[in-house]
Each structure stands twice: as structure tokens, then as C-alpha cells.
Image 1 (cartoon, helix red, strand yellow):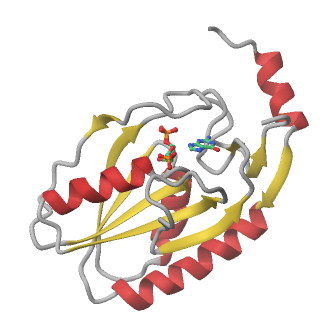
Image 2 (tube, protein in one colour):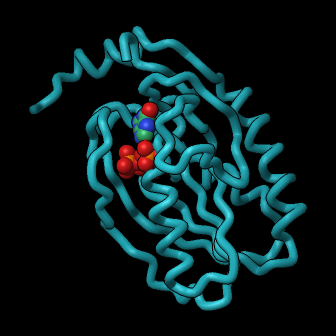
Length: 185
Ligand SMILES: O=P(O)(O)OC[C@H]1O[C@H](OP(=O)(O)OP(=O)(O)O)[C@H](O)[C@@H]1O
Ligand SMILES: Nc1nc2[nH]cnc2c(=O)[nH]1
């Protein structure tokens, strides 16, 4: 289905702002301190989960002022839709995980299928420890593993379809400067 720009503009205009840029900045600063306290002497590899993790990782990483390597991986199960499906690996990591501490950086923990599959992948690839950081954790009882949460969580949000700060609405508005919920979703 091709989307007209009018609809894309309308979704942005009618959306509810759940978190402003200032609120997100504060949350990211706090996460940076928590992660620094725990990982500063662990020589980790930080992986940005593309595409959604891009903005969060870009703001978090310059605040992690200790030795680390940066890479990316791309696993997706939404493919520009608002309902998740099978996990599809678009790019698996190429760097060795053997005996390394890994920090996975993603935008959202929704049902958690994506993050739990990534954690499993890292563990099978020989990681010493896997840490996860998400900007947003969606509040509902449909987690893939009951009670599943990231090691570092920025903020919680209501059970609605959200966009902005890396998250898309049908491929658009990853660039929106806050976190917004689509009207009616
Ligand atoms: O907890 P889950 O229900 O598994 O959903 C969370 C995942 O969904 C989004 O990715 P998406 O598949 O939309 O890919 P994208 O990052 O390229 O938008 C988001 O970036 C997370 O990786
Ligand atoms: N953009 C976006 N991606 C998601 N992936 C899982 N949940 C969501 C959501 O609410 N919004």
C-alpha cells in the first residue's frame, strides 16, 4: 500500500505527545550514569539495533566516556507495520563475541521477542555477559517472557503504538523530536 503524505502529516499532527525531548534527554542522562557505573571497566561492545535504536544510541554513546567498541545489528519483526511478525535478521553482527561483554541498545521493549532473540544470539555466539538498554518499555502483560525487562530502561509508556526518537510510523517519523502515540492506536 502506498501512503500519501497527507496521511503521514495528519498522523503526526493528531498524535499525543507522551514524552518531550527534554524528558527523554533526562532519562538518557540517567541511563548513561547507570551504564557507566556498571560497565566502565568491562571493555564492552555496544550494539545499536537498527533502525529504531539509532537515535537513542546516538545520544547515549557520547555519554559513555570509557573504552568500548561500537557496532550494529539489524533484526526486525515489524517491517513498517504496526503489528509484529516473525523476527527477520537483516544484518547479523560480524565482530567476535567470544568472552566479550555486550551492550545491546534498542529503542523499545514491546513484547520482547526481538530483544530476547538478540540476547540468545549473543549468548550462543559466546558472549561473557549480555546487557540490554531500551529507551522505552511498553506497559502490558503480553511480554514474550513474563516479567521480561531490560537491564537499563529509560521510561515506561502506555500500551499504544508510538513513534519518534527512532521509532517509525509506517517508515516515517523516526525523526520526530519526542515520543508520540498515534491517535486511536
Ligand atoms: O519487543 P518487540 O515486540 O519485539 O518489538 C520491539 C522491536 O520493534 C522495533 O523494531 P522493528 O522490528 O519495528 O524494526 P525497526 O527498528 O527497523 O523499526 C523496535 O526497534 C524493537 O527492535
Ligand atoms: N514504531 C514502533 N515500533 C514498535 N515496535 C514495537 N512496538 C512498537 C511501537 O509502539 N512503535
